[in-house]
Image: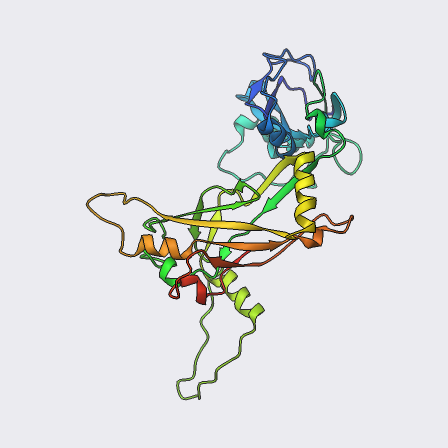
Amino acid sequence: KNLPGELQTLLGFTGFCKEFRTNASPEPSGWEFTKETVIRLQNQDLYNDMVERPLVVSLRDAAAENAPIGTGEISLVPLLHDATEVSLEVELKLAPDYYAKWWKDDEADDPKKKDKNKAPAEPAKEREPLFEGDAPPATILTVSVKVEDLVGPVEDRECWTILTLGMEGVFALPEALTSLGVTSPDDFQAHPISYKAMLLGEPFGDGLLTKAAEVKESEAVDPEAPVEEKEVTQEEWREEQMRFHCCVKFASERLIRYRGKSFIEDVRKMLSTSGGVFLYFQLEEKPPVDPKKPNPPGGAELARQCSGSAWLDLRELIPPSARRVDALCRLEANAKDPEAVLESRRLSVR
């Protein structure tokens, strides 16, 4: 309800499932589904997707090459253990061209006539509104999703959780590593090292050496002034490393996973014994892109020396009300030889 004008529409569904669409309808209802069911194997991948990926519903303009009118999201988490049907009135976030239709304007009546290279502007106050009140009414779409039975495992019915893992990056990397094969501070294509990280059995995807978040401004130095050594605290050193030096970022900085009764029991046991877990950081030398141009020397040895693990203390989760732990962890090298690169570094994982 509350469409900004008379439109021939269709619906699209994606996010939790592969995209599919309904047939077009001249009314904002009565859409014919090309398929009415989504079939998935009932396994861990399904449970993970249900907690991580909402069902995204898009309302589209069939007369304008299926241009998106607005989108909304529906959480499917209740279908795991609480309900066999989710029925919601979803408020759609309208695309700028269609939000502009709430004001009288010939150009806004047809998105095809609008200059596609022109950034959409906020409706001017002098334009005549086509609604009553201070703001347009919310565009609402009623959506229902049903399942035959509760989706989650029966053994987890009374004991399950949603686990969120996040990693901002690996910082304070040795210069011998970050400069390997790098010819420019902004170009790491020739860097011959690949990076992996894993926490609680979950991989964060491929890691990439990434340029610094900020460029440090050079300070004017008086050549005749005496040189004073300034003491730097641990916190100041860490902040400088994280702001002004390159680091390793991962494809998945945030993982959301379903976990059941057995996992929760294991975590409780861990908290009462070791009190924490290891994050593993693994480096490998990439094969050369061009066999005629070998990688810079020393890559394999650097990868071995810089691979390591970081201890994550989770004892803050022991109180019943605790839900989150944030930590900056020191990465220790796996290599135990006295010349290991990480042994003399304060390399950190956040």
